[in-house]
Image (cartoon, rainbow, N blue to C red; front, side, top):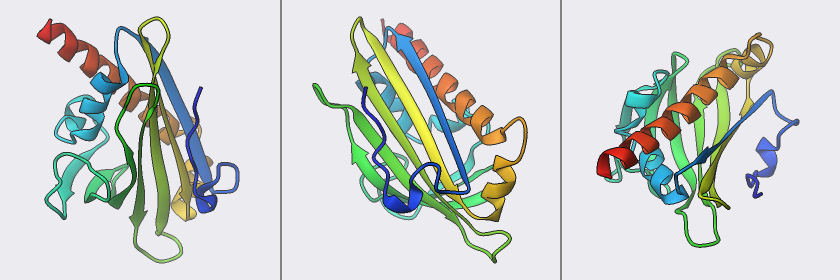
Length: 173
């Protein structure tokens, strides 16, 4: 299986917080899942921890290479920019990553890289992997919280994404 490509600054186990979530789902393709991940209009319908999505450029609501946007999650107003955008292709996984940041002082500033990998597997299955690496005091606080709210929220995001893609496929059938 493929893995996330990390810029050195965000290498897992060297940052203040890191989480990894994954699902493998039968009956979907990477292309079908990609549609509902890259169109941010769908996000609030299947992921309750996101709101106030706005774009600073003409790409929205579709994410694209270098899209500049903002959204609210975990009560943080996150500024973001897409840093990796590779749609699915035959024999190649889809890759999406954005750098997110919250400006502030030493106690409130946050710097993250949130990455996604979606790949077709044998037997009509798809693997959806999301990982996030964070720097800053808020990241340290999240990492010390049990259960880990980011781990649980990202699992809800994955589950909602997969369920939405499956439901939309069934609706079209």
